[in-house]
Length: 282
Image 1: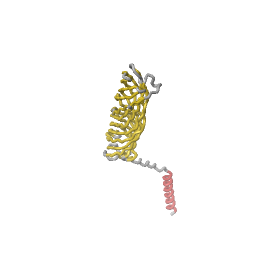
Image 2 (image 1 turned 90 degrees about the vertical axis):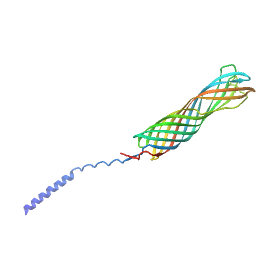
Image 3 (image 1 turned 135 degrees about the vertical axis):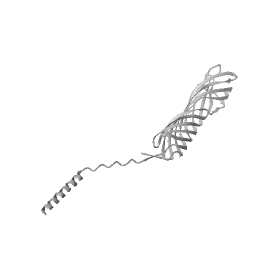
Image 4 (image 1 turned 30 degrees about the vertical axis):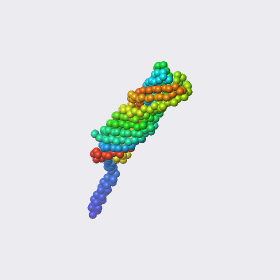
């Protein structure tokens, strides 16, 4: 009996030793939890939206004026630069196609109503026997628009960086007002009775720029965009007729202008997605 108890005690002691050793062993490390899945909404689809922004324009113009002063023929030349600035707002419509993962090709057209205006005063240089004139040239871009292609890259699930370029047009009104007439201009005062000559043009040119677009909801995007619009060799004609100190003056001015417009705007779009279903990416 004693022998049996001794053997049993030795067995329990061995089992206890094994259990203690197992308890001292380090437990295996748990695998890290899987990363949450990210839902990626492809950019393919048709969109429509609105925008608002600020525009800055600079116009370099030059030309000639010819006419008669008291029946005496004269001819003059002039050149000046006019700066304009103001706000605008309008809308855009476009389409995107994500042709490979994250690369987006698109096209967009927009129209903006604007109040980009400014003026400059300048004097003509006498090129033949006659007089010298000074006048104020005031310009206003009433509206403008573009039709452009876009190429973008989605740097993450909801942020698109893009470049853009294409066709541009604008409607601009320029008004010329005579301020001085005679050989002592501009250091003299005149009694003037002149019409203000206006010319409205619709030049076409090109537009180029870029921006970034952020999708904050599956179908809503917010963008910030910069564009440069360029209109070159725009011709205008102005007919100024009246009297200076009672002497009749009849003149016609022709000018050629180059205008560059810097556009900075923000826009809000709604995307009608008709591309593939949202993708799950890890």
